[in-house]
Length: 184
Image (tube, rainbow, N blue to C red; front, side, top):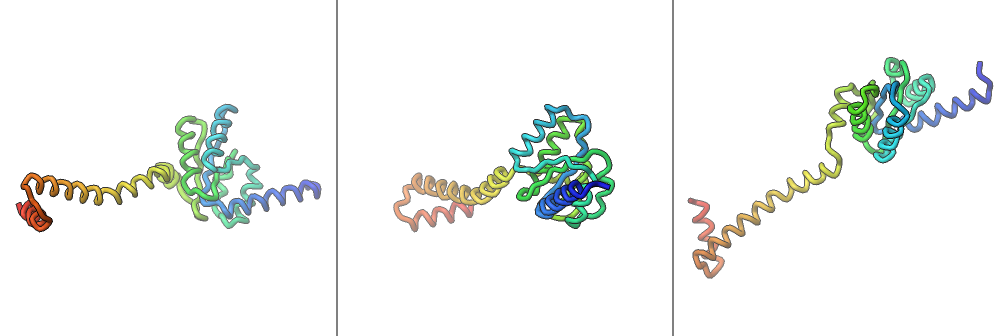
């Protein structure tokens, strides 16, 4: 039986972890056995840059904190060494960073994960990791919004050029010319 001081310390760790796990948007669990110190340092650095918390905690404490946070069915995941990557703001970042490093280092094995309070499979983690960064998604949305406007501008420019070629003097003539061109 641990001393009261040790027990109180462990209870505080579980309470802190429970609060963090409840706030996490996404978590990815991985077996990190076999990574070198240099590889682990690179992984932790990438996690920090992505705004992801990455912790290796004793399985009994992690498991208890997960249960207190409302997660069930993680007994298989917490067999063997388990690292937990999680983010309170970004659903995609933990999966993206872990997947990238699992591709680089054969020793890093993804065990499973959670997203917005629900357990997810390895295939779901892979799909999350394949989503482009937010900046790329914003660019795609902007491009989608600009394309029709750019097409209209090019059409109006072409009509204007054709009208100039036809020596159209007023807007009525240009409009009639545009209708006639469209009918062709």
